[in-house]
Length: 258
Image (tube, rainbow, N blue to C red; front, side, top):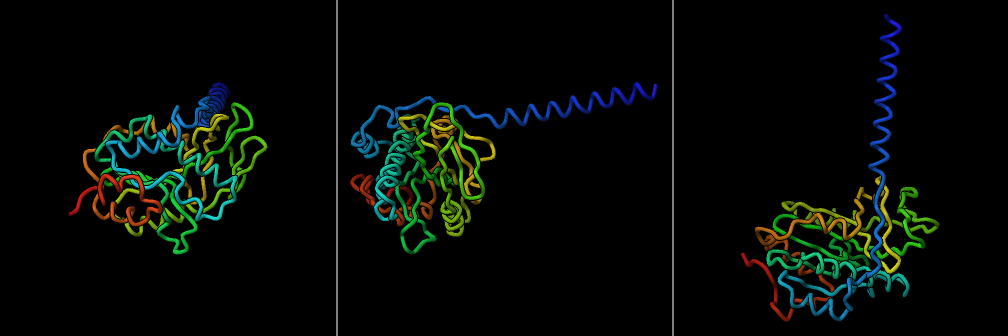
């Protein structure tokens, strides 16, 4: 009788271990995107026109501050394409149809007096602020995944990408200035003409910054907000925009004045 109890206990133990392993394996999986139209059927000029005329409050120009970062031409072009892809995604997913949503493109890092580091995009709704870093990582083949490659790098297939601490730096600097706001830093893998990497569950940027596919993340965003961001939030990001072209024709400074 005792042996029977022991055997049953052992079987139950291994069944539990197997179920945990299966669960862990499923959480690791991510579906690579097959979308290769990185500008969502629009040209850069059309994206700018739509940003100027959208219902949301938009300032800045996608890619407008990249010439200040000291990137080489290849990285600068990839960065510009990534920011335009993100802008197009915001348009296509309807995020810019909300008058209470404020968006800024190409901002200075408030913690960096040199102006050499920046924020690709900021979205603010009510007390929520998203700090977005747009990545235009072109997969060498279909169905590749982005995987961790140590503390300061990720890899996709045979390609390795260095991960900087800029987003962690930006996040801390913004939190110091907007202690009342809920700050959400995020690295976004934007569409490329070669598709989008899948993402393994352990992939993070330094500072434990999460990584998402742009379309996947935007599909889960609520459409609309009940209130505008605070005037302090608006003033801060207005002051950080490098190229405040978009929105300046509509109003000198959008949002609340109180």
